[in-house]
Length: 428
Image (cartoon, rainbow, N blue to C red; front, side, top):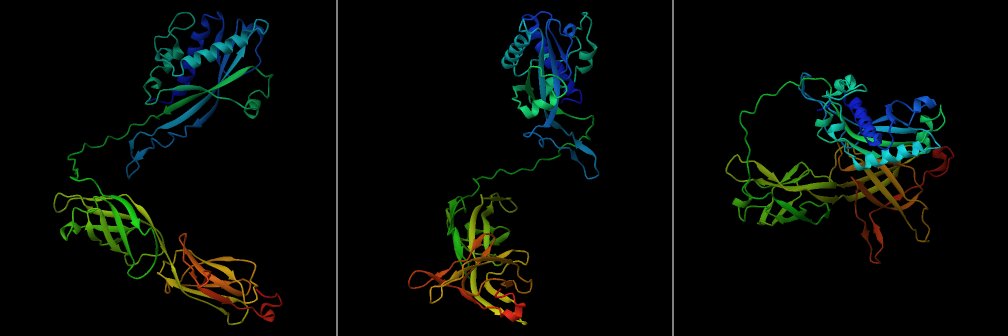
């Protein structure tokens, strides 16, 4: 791979490419590296192209492709690698009356368009000749940088620049006609000798005789929680056949919880929700032995989503002991972990006169570890009758409908806080 000299090697390669491209059409024109600046007429001669590296950025595609791998004690066992893009500015100088800058610009665009992947012949080498025909010491020092051995070949592409990018480059001198290109990807490896790993003594691998299970459907995909609730899994190669032998070692995973299914066919399983499954979104997978006798590894199906809706059992609102606030208690099923956020949704219901509070509310809370099926909240809402829903992990409980088809349960009556109890602030 390429070492720390690769950036300099890229600049030398681009310089060699342009010098070859302009040599015949503009004899006497030269290519130099350096920032754009005012050039004296005697320095420009028959034309000048300045090549300037003005920006280095990490390559977004490969920036994490080769991270250093270290042993537990910090020893490097795999070479780290950095991937960067180089943004290069080409500035053109020459006699304006003879249109030399525009000629050099056209030659540069044509050369880099015709050869976006620089050839090895332009890269630094020990046999390259200098201005007097003797070996070029700069090229010789950059030979062997590894640019020509990169796993991803260097590529040059036109890079449009806006005013805000050009202004800093020419803030100290009059503008010089310029164009920018991006060189990517440049891979840099530091000097480090990774510690070689020992060879593998034995490779234990297993090729299953059958295709892994393919889960195609979970029915129902949206399920209201209930004791004894059951789901049906459909797909391909879910079991080896039917009967007790087909279900040996067969499991259904609801996230990390296991359930033992009943085999209806190799394409259909039926199982109850496992104990401890809480409401919310879950990933369902089928796991079965791959075959080959006792001790053979398991194969796992693709996951499918299952949404389990919570059920509100009771909702009750009372005034606190000192009468200054309203405490809302919502009991529900199934139980949830104490770390699980629970959101109580309150939607107003019209009273007999057709009046109802003007706002709906969403109040967040958590359960106590000792009471995992109840949430107690202090709410600050307008008094009145509200429909109550519970949202856990993005899945919301259902509302029941009355004879007229409108939602009517579960509901809770929020009492009014006495004005004197809240220090004259009015109803909370």
